[in-house]
Length: 203
Ligand SMILES: [Zn+2]
Image 1 (cartoon, rainbow, N blue to C red):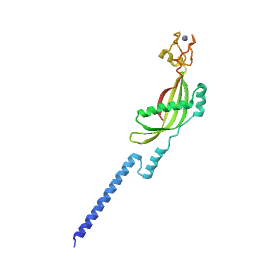
Image 2 (tube, rainbow, N blue to C red):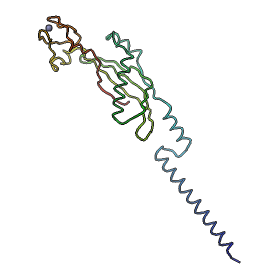
Image 3 (cartoon, rainbow, N blue to C red):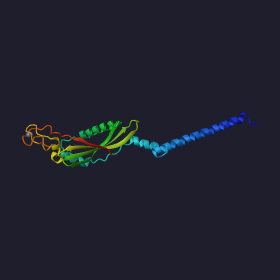
Image 4 (cartoon, rainbow, N blue to C red):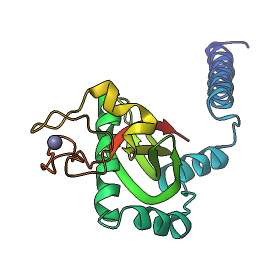
């Protein structure tokens, strides 16, 4: 006779089907989610991607051995280690202003050194990682370009900033001169022998 036993058996059967269906639906959902986010639903592939992103710093294309001797020939007193630190400080400030945290620098290299219109540009490339506000770590790479005004005549710097000798009032045309060309007075304001931040770009 079709009694309680059969009813229970049917109930269990339907429950199992519903459960399997639900699980199957959830898995399909997760997979489509994964494909959207990672371009694959293969868990191994996703983990591999994640790991690679977390652990591998980007390489820097360094031409330090080519450009550093040129830079140091023009600036014999330049301290390359200090210059890298300055560039990284500028970059850190820039990234922190964007709300990024846990900034860790990896390799740094001199990527380029050019002279254009009386100004010298040193492009410093550095690989680094940072976290965003959701705690996601990103490996990336930036160029920090530092500039140095070498020849005020060519850049129009002296005119723009109206630099004159504090002693005799003569116009000071070259920032390379530490003394006034006319009276020989020491010109502190013009001894602006510093590299300044020119630009920051992610590469
Ligand atoms: Zn003077």
